Image (cartoon, rainbow, N blue to C red):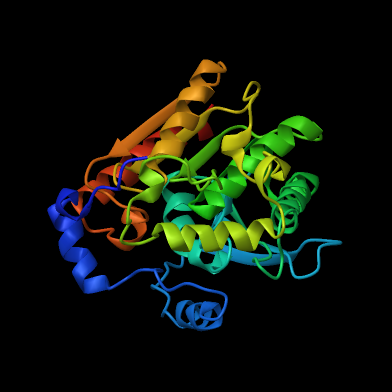
Length: 314
């Protein structure tokens, strides 16, 4: 593999400016620094929410510490389609409260419900713990659909970054266990390949660089490596993608995950899965969440919401 290119000159000018203000990066993420990173993220003041959405937390039976936050538009009647979401954070940080703002908008604009799972974080909870947490939460949602006002025939899954990687693994797990179905899967720059063998995986992404990615994967996989890593843990390792739900994938062209995500979208199409791929020039990892006021971030959000609307209305 050739030496990695310097992607800094290729950044979208708006994003480059925003990055200088953010000073955001995980280049020093280690087991020793992890507690401080978690504390810092937990203390970020939440953005204000509207009063148009009701939010309730539910504990998942038989999964200690695992809960699902259910979002529903106030004054909504009848059963609504639902988006079941997994938060990002490299498998080692984050909380489902970070999805409150997302569903504050989506529940109203898309006339749907949202459900965001609080799964265990690595390294304290390595694979398969977090994935089984997500599966248990989704099963609970299906089992309680009538009580919650959810249309069980239209429950899609999704996530961003590590959450999208969990969603991709969850889609494969749901397909193979065949207990219930998902209607679609929305994957925002999914973290799906632990091998870091692509060209883009070596780029010094200003938000999630290679060393942070290695730490996240090592924390999640524990002692698993090589051929012992199952495709439920790293969806890019799956060789059979047939039978998966319609899929949306978006990723920044300068994201370290760009190559693995583009390849996954291609293989989904080859497997007969209805799929849609968007690649945004000049954009690194997390651009839509960290630089939401840039033109490219606004376009990405709009295009994803158009796709979600089409799936929720099926």
